[in-house]
Image (cartoon, rainbow, N blue to C red; front, side):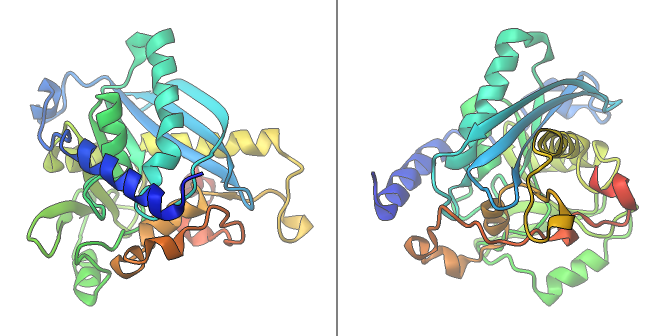
Length: 309
């Protein structure tokens, strides 16, 4: 078995190689149309875990019609993750399973293959500008957009007072501001995706789409704060776990089953800073089983069940 240090070197080398294949501009005719005419299918991907178990997960793919955002197809699979979590390398842990789902769809119902995929995570907004959305995009060949609920603080982009002021200045759904690295490169945008929610989402290019188009499309696919393809994938995967593992409990018995929105390591990936990233071998922990479920991650301006699912 490779040591954490060897694994980091191997994965970083592969990221550097695949990074050269990322296309950061529009490549499809529908992307250039103001109303996205020609776009008919949008995909969403997510993994959900039972609290206390970050090894066994429910991998979910959904395909929605556009612009009605009604579900056309879904694929739900229980999977066992074998790769450890290492900050900055989430894709090596999760991509194989979502790629499998896309390949099953292409084999069984190719007419329903999405024309663009939304990923619950980051693209260029990443330590080496190659996050989960970029990895999946290059591997699948599909246009991909990364949409994160929390800011990954990298390359001089922080939750500073200035950042909070910029968020407060977002007046309505569709308003955004750029996330600029110390190099001067724009790695993504903070987007107020809904009039109903003041908390932004963080949009970045994954593959074969420009940032401006990714932001416009994200807004167009939002009924609530989170884009509908990601929201549906998340809700359906968590509902699958609830229905198939009704006896699973953590904490107090009366709380029943608690499901984390993505793996605990995924949340760590989104909030890890540059300083912790510099200490990669020290943060390697493939277990990460004692992280509490933070309900605030899913509390939005919407109320009750609508905010969650």
